[in-house]
Image 1 (cartoon, rainbow, N blue to C red):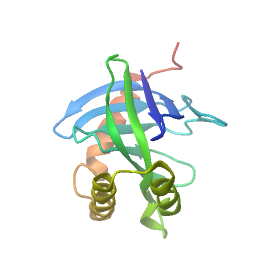
Image 2 (cartoon, one colour):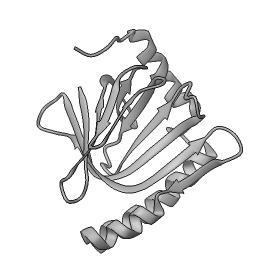
Image 3 (cartoon, rainbow, N blue to C red):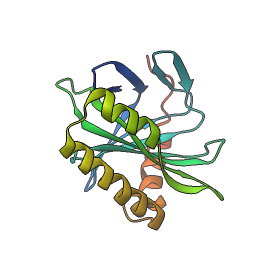
Image 4 (tube, rainbow, N blue to C red):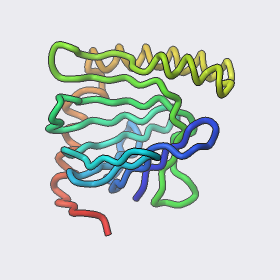
Length: 174
């Protein structure tokens, strides 16, 4: 399956090769085994370790957790809009809204990232005020929840899905 992000102006953004893992009380989970691709205009990356992403029913973020990331990146939450399944059951979509919540193992910890890009794009793309207010508050809530390891942002919840991904033994997509 594919997780396809775009920007507010409909410009293409990240496209991730993924596999659907299942759902729980928090939403749907997809995974990306080590070696699978993520591409955007001008850049391409290969997953250096397995990762899983929660697509919650709120449709305003995607929560990704990495295992064995070489730079210690554990959590990356993309705040978004209309993060959901498309009409194609093999394609999840979302609008990347710039703000991210990041947790790195070690001294740096947890923080809200890309505030500068958020400020610039709010003006350039004319984000509606109610979306701005909602996502700014959500970023702070998610930062607090990640820092406190509240479910589903705790290691145990994500590790269960990472274990499921690794049990699949998924190779390169066709």
